[in-house]
Image (cartoon, rainbow over all chains, first blue to last red; front, side, top):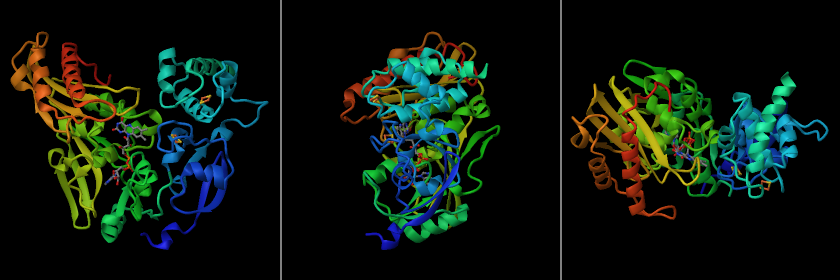
Length: 167
Length: 290
Ligand SMILES: Cc1cc2nc3c(=O)[nH]c(=O)nc-3n(C[C@H](O)[C@H](O)[C@H](O)COP(=O)(O)OP(=O)(O)OC[C@H]3O[C@@H](n4cnc5c(N)ncnc54)[C@H](O)[C@@H]3O)c2cc1C
Ligand code: FES
Ligand code: FES
């Protein structure tokens, strides 16, 4: 087996939601676990741990990525945005969060952080999607509760809210 | 579902990376986008003692288009290739195919070169490498070498790469003027690995097909090329012997059965997808569109 040094804790510096955070963890620490356990940012959820469900999706330099498929050590030097960074004030929801609430785009909420980050990044690049495009945009995220219809509606509603915000 | 312990190496240059690889030998693995490797580590299907993380290596993120090829560096993400208008114009097949690789959130991290190094017969980009006669640029302790795609893939998840070597880039060959390309596949859910897929390059001369070649996803052990010219060469582009093509494909492919689909079904699918893709080449592909 590997030498004990393999599991020695390493000092790491992560930039999460605009804040520089330091932690100490072995190289095998997944970014998802670093966010949740080392930094206490439990908004990022962990479902499948192999890239399929999308619950753990965060933004890496603004682009959606599975935090369960990245090591924390490799995330150094990148700007990480979690759902808390998109919006963590119930009185001031982001357009995507507001749209999900308005359209009943969540039930248990387990999948929701991954949808929030995914949809936020998608709308940055495609501000005015069609319904088909909205469906395609969320096709990498699984939800066991809603049946997706209301999440698709929420994507379109969020696009609308963002346009109003800018107008 | 946590990876076993490993030593993390963060080289800054290709030379440093291959020096570490040479030192750790078969106990080492290159870590690129991690989209195939990290699941294997988490499921403990792989337990390397050393990971050589090439994320910080300089000079690997270039994407260059020349008259002969599109050269994709080892740190170009699938999403970067997909977005690159120059690459799509020079070789429309690249964008046509890369859009079928997983979901956007996987494509932002996964590298195109990594998927070729991974050599999964279910991968789209190995099939594109085969069809375009790609050249794999390899660097090891002993220096650089170039390997033709036909000599690179030797079996499922198996290549001729030595433990001390890494891929620094792949050069996809541009196709002759008048070539129309198509990529199509069938998956149970959007973004899943395909049950079967086909990449097609058809050489059109006026109203006649001069030649056609195809490579396949998920139905051959390695992405090899089937020459369809004997079936379609000399036929009018709008009246091709599609049944003969389907027969040739069914005879060529060699799928396995698994929980997702049986071998016979995959064979039928490969033949039918090729037939349908070929039936659409009467219309010129708009450069860059998919
Ligand atoms: C949910 C999900 C769905 C997916 N669906 C698809 C799909 O439909 N089609 C598809 O093709 N892929 C799919 N993938 C895999 C994805 O395309 C990967 O990005 C790709 O296969 C590997 O690229 P990577 O950069 O992530 O490589 P890594 O995961 O980092 O590495 C993969 C392997 O290649 C080796 N390697 C990587 N780069 C190099 C290099 N430069 N030199 C030498 N060796 C190297 C590594 O050592 C490792 O063995 C999916 C992945 C997930 C998680
Ligand atoms: S937990 Fe990361 S994709 Fe499911
Ligand atoms: S709301 Fe329960 S999984 Fe999506």
